[in-house]
Image (cartoon, rainbow, N blue to C red; front, side):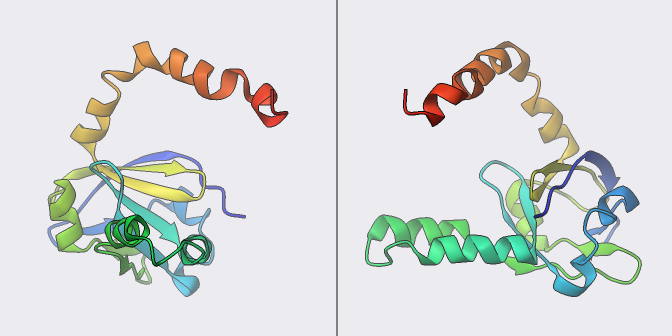
Length: 157
């Protein structure tokens, strides 16, 4: 099971290449062999998955009813712009231009790699920081709603 931890400030070079931080590379020991997958995220960011994690997502998606229009539309949007993300020998990946443009990430800019369990979100640093300008007041209520009665929900109460 993949469990990625950390938040990393990085800078893209003039070609849109990203040097994966060594602390993150250590958490992805097979990435150079198995590969990485990149796609648009649900918000204004990109999401990188280890290939093994993406394989499980594809298995889940393949169980959905392809005859339902909502399913087809979701899969089409969810996989739009999906690409392999090869890593070179030095630990760099080249973010696809079309994906960067779709979320407002520019070459020679600062980005944040935010690990979330089994995936890595890639955000423009300014957009990422703006996400948290509004969060503190709502965060406590969100935690209570989602986690506060966790045991009761699991037991059907």
